[in-house]
Amino acid sequence: MAGKTHAYAVTVRWTGNRGSGTLSFRDYDRDHEISADGKPNIGGSSDPSFRGDPTRWNPEELLLASLSACHKLWYLGLCAQSGVTVLAYEDMAEGEMVEEADGAGQFVRATLRPRVTISAASDPAKAAALHETAHAMCFIARSVNFVVACEPVMRCEA
Image (tube, rainbow, N blue to C red; front, top):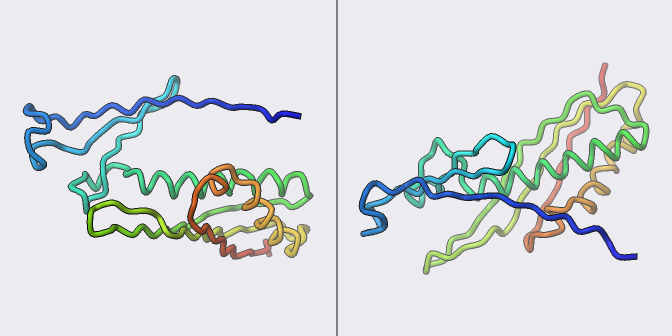
């Protein structure tokens, strides 16, 4: 049986023209707005290392956030299906990108560090094991070509 196809559409509009466009490398801002129908806009820019605005989200942070959010969504759903009650979930994800001499670069790794609190009645071993399943199912992690590690810390409600 063929799988379902899902389509997504976003608009990225550059807002960094200071009046002379890209006349020179230093004459424009890297700012942009990310939008999609029915959703609030996201103010984006490049990383400050690449002349971006540090108060706006950059593509590297958004990629890492996508990995983290996808894992969390799968994990919570799997827990709900498996009788594990999650009471709190927070991930302090980190990623590493290597920039080459010519300016090109790529992510080489990301590490998810979810801190999960489960109910006292839940099985801690099952809760921990479900992270592996969530990782194997995550649409975003399955789509990237770098290592995505997961280092969960589990805590049971007292």
